[in-house]
Length: 247
Ligand code: NAD
Ligand code: ZN
Image (tube, rainbow, N blue to C red):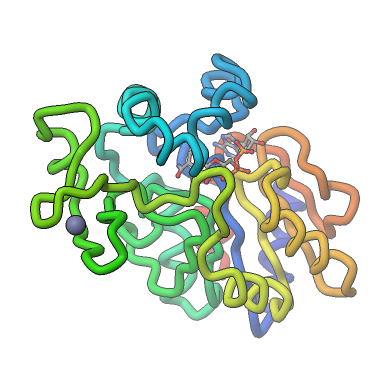
């Protein structure tokens, strides 16, 4: 383990452009369960059953069913960033990390102080009116305190949608996310099984170059074979603290 940490530090010190790609696994230590892990919703309910409801067609066709499910399974109580989030923010301050591309919707990188964050699946703390000419923005308190299952816009009466990318929708910041990943000299994937596309595809594309891919994840990922260093751990905060302390 320590040898691998030293190797990651060496790579980061030599690199002029290091980018992190983060997934649900970086937020489990903050108290938000991932989807595919032991307590994950896919394990409990089945991936297909979740996809059938958390998709854009179902949102418009049956907002009542969508919001009943969303309120029960996706409205997490507010949590603080974990040590791992703070360590990435510190690395950026030290000039050793040049950006984060994240699949997470929890806003915890930004809360920890990271400035260069590219979120591709949106922000679960924001809710936006679906009427094009309105687009009024609401926070989670409005949704939680709304006297009905389906929250409606207070200015135009249209349905409000969580500002997250549902199945069947395009990701946000596609070009920026891909560019950022492909331009990296060292790419560090943290807490992602690399099964969700298109992000996993960007990392796969990166891995065909002669640049260095580092993977820090509990359990296997789809690109372990292509990694210069693969570190299998659930103590991501401690690992990142050691790395950050040596930079
Ligand atoms: P995933 O569920 O596919 O993979 C998470 C990976 O992290 C797993 O391999 C798991 O073993 C690993 N992991 C769990 N705890 C860890 C820890 N402490 N340290 C290191 N690794 C750990 O997640 P994904 O690839 O990010 O994709 C799931 C999708 O669900 C994404 O699209 C994301 O938007 C969404 N999601 C987001 C959140 C969030 O915002 N916090 C939470 C759940 C799901
Ligand atoms: Zn409106």
